[in-house]
Length: 379
Ligand code: FAD
Ligand code: UDP
Image (cartoon, rainbow, N blue to C red):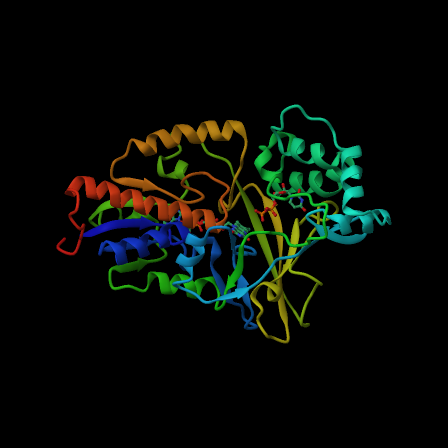
């Protein structure tokens, strides 16, 4: 009898498997329908021997010491600060928009103070910032919005930014200094030997059994377990009883390039003219030494693996209905990007699962009495 059946071997499921197995001596079965662990963070060496991310570029960054320290138990790190250029009007300019972006685009020589005035003169007054359009036009005005955000967002989400929650474009700041890093978090680093190696170490424990290539629905009636932790799409768990929650998908096109690098930085965004949103050159991210490199193009699409929850009010409403069903269940916990329908980065998912672990432990303490150390080892 397993104490826990964990559905999904991505960050959400693997963190809980590791915590429960090592801290509570629980017997865990972790299962994934894919043929690998790691969820969307899975990486592997392609046929040319170059480390690539199967589900698009994953750059680790966090402000949480707790999350960073926790993951550091399973991997050494390679410091890496991601830099992105955007292809706009035939030029490659820094993204997020910063002082150099504006000076380069318009042939100016503004100072930071002057750039603040420049933005202020372009900004559109918005009383209450609600949408992804509001976020950008209220800071930099219509023209820069059109050049950098509108096309990219329409391509990525098949929706106008005016229909999407503010939180989506708010992920990308605007700067008046020359800082050209994509992220400014305290901790920015890549797992030295890749994500998959890190996951392997997390899940390497006698209390953890891994089952791949299996949908949990195939085994849920056959394999006995006490509690379930579910990290797949929440609407699927409840058989879409309230209808489908929209998820955005991507198609990835990989190429191996016979050169040290394909482009001058980790990622180049294509807001406008191309059918893809961005191209990433993996060797910048991984730091791998290899005479060739590998790149990936990302083509957004509606159908396919559910990668992105779509943040907009009616979807949040629909999710709430599923969430209510979820909270009424006593023996099943929901965590992760798909099961809680949140546009979370990896570190946020780790934090969410660490919090859930603490909650589960607290619940067990209440059930089994204060002060009594919970142990599953007799089961
Ligand atoms: P997942 O990794 O999706 O894991 C869920 C697992 O559940 C999957 O492996 C799935 O196969 C399995 N599953 C689902 N249903 C079933 C079922 N019925 N039976 C069995 N198994 C099932 N985050 C960052 O911090 N930095 C980045 O740079 C970054 N880049 C990203 C780029 C892309 C293109 C995408 C799509 C995401 C990116 N993210 C990034 C987000 C990151 O991928 C997620 O935060 C994280 O992987 C979510 O982990 P998870 O465990 O919640 O979900
Ligand atoms: N975005 C944009 N232009 C860009 C980069 C981002 O319009 O050059 C918008 C777009 O809506 C995108 C969102 O900002 O979906 C978040 O961007 P991020 O790079 O964080 O996306 P992710 O890496 O999660 O795909």
